[in-house]
Figure 1 (cartoon, one colour):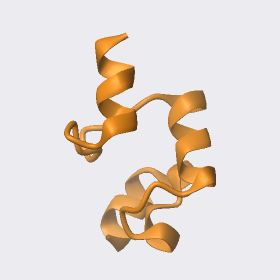
Figure 2 (cartoon, rainbow, N blue to C red):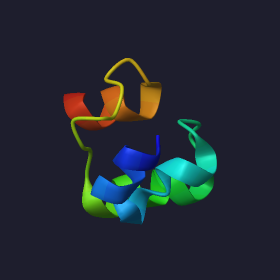
Figure 3 (cartoon, rainbow, N blue to C red):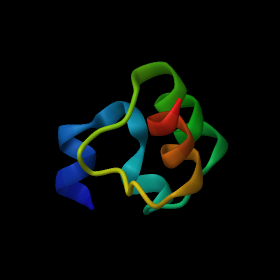
Length: 50
């Protein structure tokens, strides 16, 4: 998870370890998704289908 956090520092991957925290979901809304985001995660799926 540390490497992903270095590649995408604004998402806070290291601190939430893949869980959809408020801060992380805010970053997704502001910055969009990355190749590291799970497409099966409901908020990501909703963004993709919009």
